Image 1 (cartoon, rainbow, N blue to C red):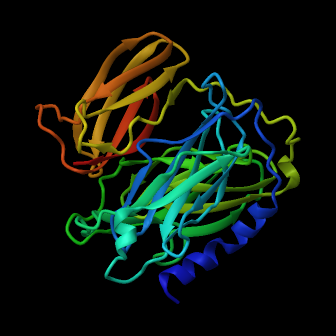
Image 2 (image 1 turned 90 degrees about the vertical axis):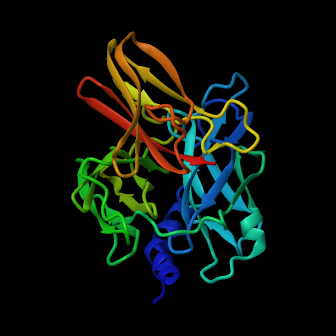
Length: 352
């Protein structure tokens, strides 16, 4: 059975279930649906043709709308498609999915190198067209592969929550051809396609393993996406023991620290005068803050913040340079914020 057949087998039950799961709209009227970053998503290898795609949904006052159903579609499903074609926005108005290619042989079709249009729709409001395609001139060996939560090299698995208590699922990392494994403690960003049903903590590597703690919230189906090479996906089925009314979504507990998605992402140097990206975060109380950028091997690139800060919203601009003032190379980078004993991290892509 080839990779795509295993992928289809692993997620088909979850897709069928989520297709029948009625999703309540969030409060407020959608006026804008926008891809996070530039809307240009690059699939760097044929071996691992997946990428995490995010959209933000806002109202007429540009405030994020939580618990809104978002549908994803592509202009040519024979070339690209979405593993999960629907998701629900979280408390920051963000909805996530996984885009994949249907191409498994060389040469790569020219249309895929140029980019295939993708769209997202919420409450009949459609996003501007984004694009997904290959960086056809820079296909290379991955630094490592995984995390794999299914058997063998299958990134996808299905799990049923047995109690309302949090539980942990572990994925395996496989060494790359040249670079081996990422060091222990390397963070992996984690997303949920429906935070009302299940949420997950940020994950870090432990030798060749990645541990993800999942919190069941309410009856239904959610998919937990773990960034990686390729991203991993865990389809979570939550039974009736935690059932709640969908007409009144639960209010999210205030988080001591909340890390936002950087913008723009990816960082594209072509034709850009002020190359860089803005990282936002929120503190619920005053604390000492450490904000750093790392490469995927866990090496520190630059410290952006290391000081006591007041409660509230904060933003920091990173110009794409390391601590010595040198421009960083194209690739995936991790930005991580710490406040006290708490830590949050996300990833961003630099394209030069």
